[in-house]
Length: 235
Length: 325
Image (cartoon, rainbow over all chains, first blue to last red; front, side, top):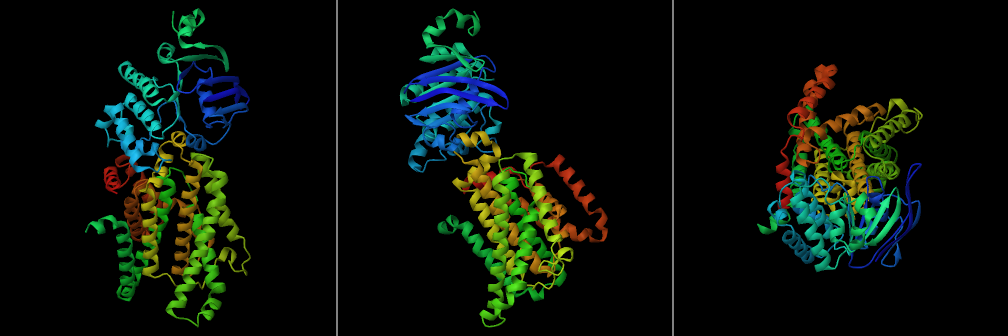
């Protein structure tokens, strides 16, 4: 469904990605793990068009989308939940969700999906008319994911959904990620520092180091891989 | 009643137009000095509400609003001075109607020229953020001032002397009618689904982009629309005082408008209207103490930032209105 070939990105003169290639098959959860600065977020940002790729190619649904503008990418059904949550702090929870459906015109469908978001994350319903900026970190992350789903994506890219969130809420969020993958057949590309957690719910994984893929395998195999265990799983 | 509630923004617009027309007919009974202050307040409302679309709702920082006002003032004045007589002639001599038509044409030309300037400044520079955008718009403001200042003093724009003998078309009806239209357009835009994009851009550009919002287009739309209304305000200003000069559209005028927006509350249309009226009145009260005007304004700003950083009106007020809309 999503295919990245030899993607290269530079920030000024510093090269952040040295030809990253990865494949995300339909209806799967694929995870990208690696240390700080390995280029995980950069990869996602380049795929969704938030930054320009200097080389390589991004293909989605068989069509090339390299360096298209972010709003064009979203309209094709590839939605990015950026790192650090980034909810619209001065809009209410409900307005945030409606913002997510910005490109849609079907009122009934939007209403249905708002309700679906609330059954997924009941805590959001309790805070429906609260300003998003006043939510806790975990609630903001829930809102960011729910908002992304409002655009009815076929593929969702999540950047560090566990960052700075209470462990209890991390559990709840990851449960929902698995659920939307199973129930709605949503393809997910997940970037995580918490490798343990990410590999536990994924089908396939890529290990990134200083802008290169150094290892790829099924998630189960990666969890057994001594190199990965030592470097990322804390053995 | 239900119907009235559904179309209440349109009803407000009609009512405002009607009231300004009625008051305009009776404006001979208003003391000339008071009337003039009211008209200046009306023009300031247009300037502040339109700048609020850019600075308040969309979260950009434009320091050049007076530049757009200047373009509108000069262009519309040029139309009514240079082409006015021939338009009047075409319409069968001076009458209420032919004056009105001339004024509308002049205003529209002024507004459209300002909008084109807004677009020209906007498209390349709206990829900049925060301070950089502020500097570009500030530069634009100065360019406009200097360009008009350096036109030939015998030419239509009069160089540093400015233009005089502009017909006094700006009546209560025109000023407040256009102010009402400006408020209506800005408010209904921001409260629509489309308009929520402006607020989203202000809150977080990256998140907006990843929601499918074309942030550059929103910023350009806000900029062009803001410039258009500033141009109209400039036209009204020129046809109110009958004389304009480049100094009137400098950086200080831009700052005046920004103060209104900040005091009224970024993103609160009603608050900005209140602030525009209040500051215009205060300005008149301080006429005898001209030197201290900016000091008083600065102190007012500092106190405001400490006591009510969100502006005159409570945020919840805006929220409630938005929810019921």
